[in-house]
Amino acid sequence: MQCKFGDPTCPCQDGDMCHYEGTDGWPPPVAGRGKGQMTTTETPLRVGDVLQGFCGGWFGRNSYEDKRVEAIGSDWVVVRDDRNYPLFSEGDPERLIEYRGTGGTE
Ligand SMILES: [Zn+2]
Image (cartoon, rainbow, N blue to C red; front, side, top):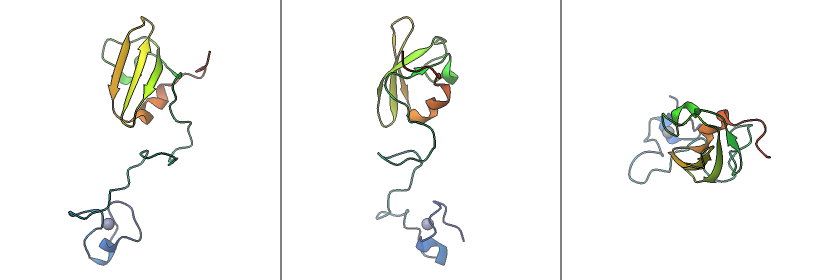
C-alpha cells in the first residue's frame, strides 16, 4: 500500500493509521511551501519580476497589461500594472512563474 502523501517511511503502508492524518497528524508535505525548500528548478518569483499579459486571469478578467511584482507572501502576490494600478492575487506565487517575462529587470 502506498502512502497517499508519498512518504515511504509512513506507518500507513503497514496498515496503521497514516501519520499525516488524525488529531496528532503531521503537517502534510505540500510542494512549493516552506522557505528554502526548492521543489522546482525554476527561479522563484521575485519582487521586480514582470508578469506578461493576462496571466491566466489570476489578476482579474480585465487585466491584460504586463504587471510588475511589488510584494510576495506565502500565498499571495501584489503586482502593479501599466496603468499604475495595484492588483492582488490570492494563491501560491509559484503558479505565476510561467507568466514571467524573460527581461524581468530593467
Ligand atoms: Zn501515510
